[in-house]
Image 1: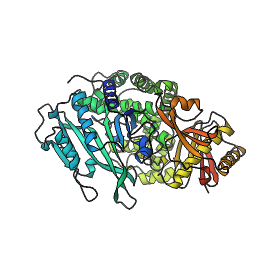
Image 2: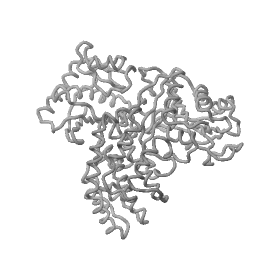
Image 3: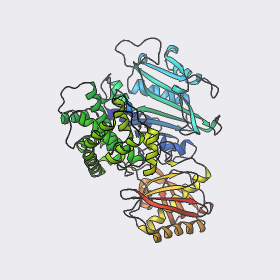
Image 4: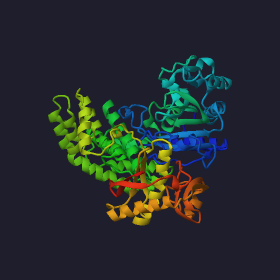
Length: 590
């Protein structure tokens, strides 16, 4: 097989699925709006949740894209050969269109004909079956019909061959995974999934069930296919590399780090630090470069971002980098990825300035913090001491845990949380990289509140000005939380006027509907929202009010009521700061 670059794999993948009737859709923001379980977009399916649940997608029932993703669940594993915080996911979807057999045939054709992988180096796994769902003999039969020997098909349980649901309820189902033999010897006749020479490179998920609130599984009305292939791991495997940091887009980043550290040769611990720095600053650059405008803070997305930057700085110091450097690595990242993700170039000044500010802020206290840690690290770390390290010296809890682990000590995380919640309005789950973002579910209550955010957004722009844009939302069945760009605290008059304006639209019983149009048409119509870089695709524009004189026109994919009369009375219960230049409103419907 010939060497393959990241860009070649991207182009091959998208071109192949477009030739098979799939519409190429743009990568979504790293900050999800419609998934209840994650702080960041962790998979290509997250932006598609409403369409996987039955809404019509404006570009049809066959879709493909390259989705930028962030996962922090395995952050302690970063630095090994495969784990990454930021990665690119190649995906294709069937929204109630084709099923298992065609999905498997497409996967097989791409692997063997487009990538040239020999049949003898492939193996697959399928769901073994349990009391919830039967053994997936259909997938196994499809693989065998394509030439995969029975001995190369393993049947595994839910832990390995089942996906979802994303929350406690919702779409889920069995999956089939594809493995590539990376060993230097000929692959064995029998497939052993525990043999690390077999590396998973692709996963086809069959969302044919829906988990109910009582824990049972029912067949879904719309049966979907969701597939995913990690770009970095696949490029590494196909080129015969033993780790993802050897691929073309990572090499310039790690080289820049080793040059700054003046390392020509390094031990395993130094190599791990170089990889952590490369991964974390690549992830931080993409989070900062996202169109949603996240910046380092002690709240939710910003907390994870701060954690990544500060962990990279600490590891940089262990390999001898003492001068400001994060912006230099970010510049290298932008150079590597700006052609595929032009938002990095658009937001380059913001990225560089935020990294420089955060590095300066942390560097000023890091040395003092490490000295303080040494003083208290004569025994297990109390929750109060961990909080002091956080609040006074800027040490994320995970950094204190990591330092403690190096000394064989533990940290009282429960005590830390108690101290933490007394001083900060920080989500209890933010440090694990998860919170209930976007819509908690698609119930009538959250649908009503989601529709109300459209009225709120339009009212804010009318009262405060056109500089107002949505920066994030969090909606449960009980209340909405809406973040928006505005430089100062709203006055009581402004809050009251916005609230009255929203209630006026509810009283007017305005119709709510959508029209599918191109991005260009949406812009010409005056719709607001985050416009994708790739023009020409079709989008949904939701209108509140008469088409010739709407109160609100907004790009959106979420659920809505059909008339504002269904909303009830809108009440703002709090207005507060959310971040630099960002305000937050919490509101309810009575």
